[in-house]
Length: 347
Image (cartoon, rainbow, N blue to C red; front, top):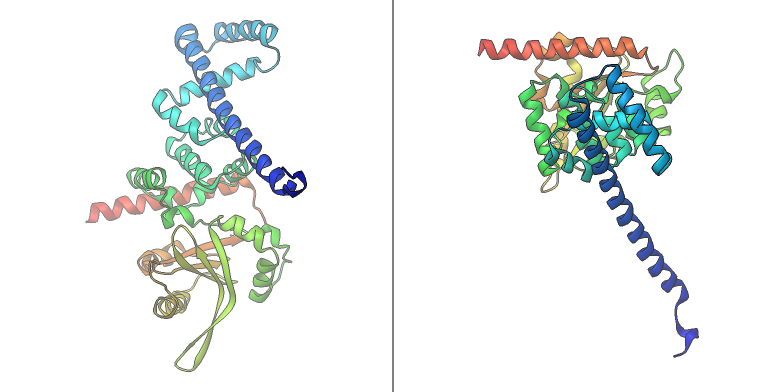
């Protein structure tokens, strides 16, 4: 055999790919087994030793066990780690459910999510992390920025949330209520106290990667100031995106002031034009997102924008006090759910 004829670069690439694939498989197996180990340790401690006791006796047991395990196995079995194990089992007491979770997420993501007390909120982050492959840092950023509370799904009744999450879990189908959020954070744009719509648009384009991260990873940018012509009159769509999983065009219209009734008609015109001239086979109807600096909830409700496939959301160019934002979002969720209950009673 003539060794000079062997393509060393191709050989190296092939062997490297095999090694990397094997390492990934080993890492995935190690992650699943580690998570299962922690769950079993938590079950053993919680069910057979603590038996619901969380007082001084329980703390003493964990400290004693931690000391012995550390002597035997070295670092990694601290008192805090044992508490994580116990909490893990308490959060996911059903082994079958936990087995599904550990196959989707790494241990650090599981450890972050398991301290979310609301089951629906917890399921939201489990499925979104798995589908969009968030690393732990991004997951923590999403939780810190109250992504779940900013989505429309959080304002729905529990049974509707469960249905949407089931579709996400079983069929990997995203609903618009999961995709769109309110408000959007545009603090990275570096805008001064006074700015124009053109300034806002230019800042978004300059930081397009960050804007797409805030929108969601499935958005693809198509055009800025897209010209459309109707009856010899030119109109311009501020920003045009495509959402891969929703399989539809998304119009984003930027407004400096509060949302006004005329904004709906403007975006409806754009959506109907796109439906007629730009939709391709297999796509869903276009969706409009009006980003404004403020909005009246009653305006939005009375105009029945959801039936027009239009969303209205506020944008914030400066991050607010997060406690204040959390309080505001909780009030918004409560008001939305109250309105839905009122509608159901009237029907």
